[in-house]
Image (cartoon, rainbow, N blue to C red; front, side):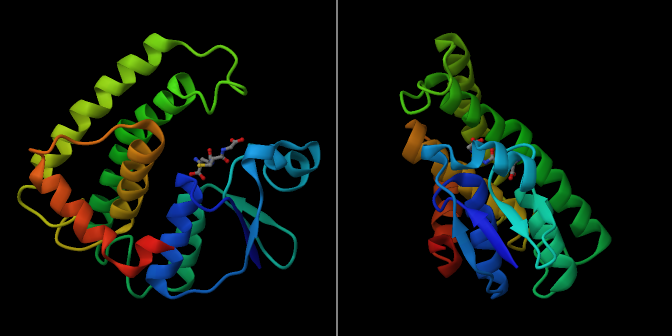
Length: 205
Ligand SMILES: N[C@@H](CCC(=O)N[C@@H](CS)C(=O)NCC(=O)O)C(=O)O
């Protein structure tokens, strides 16, 4: 078993943090997305038809892509400590927040990255500045929303740290370090949450 990854990229980082939280060790193999190693015909054909990272490879040669699908696979094998919720209600709430963070936070940050970054300009030939601007505004509003949400609970989905925090943390850091999108200073509950989840040893994974 091994995981194809590009450390530091937000979607692979989810799996790195998740496995660190669980104390599961899986060998990683670096695939350089800046050299488009994940876009070779062989990678697309044999590893992941979508081309993205991370991808889990089992010893029988089968592959599983999508960061959350990979985490769910390990969750089924190693249920403790639960990171997808511990009872039906918690599980559903984690799912609800996972979808919200993915669609309403990660997606607009990704649009800023694709349409607004000089680092992606070589690959994304038709960048549209207005799309980047609109999505910057969506992200700014989402910081405000998250700050309000985190006023009465320590973690994204409730009282317990979950995979929703992992996805939100990876998105938050991606927004900041590659897209210059950061919450306002007055978003104190969001800053406190970021401090809380970043101080966990797994965040360095
Ligand atoms: N929804 C996928 C997204 C995978 C993805 O887009 N990964 C990025 C790294 S963060 C990537 O491989 N980008 C380079 C490319 O698509 O060529 C997941 O959650 O794993």
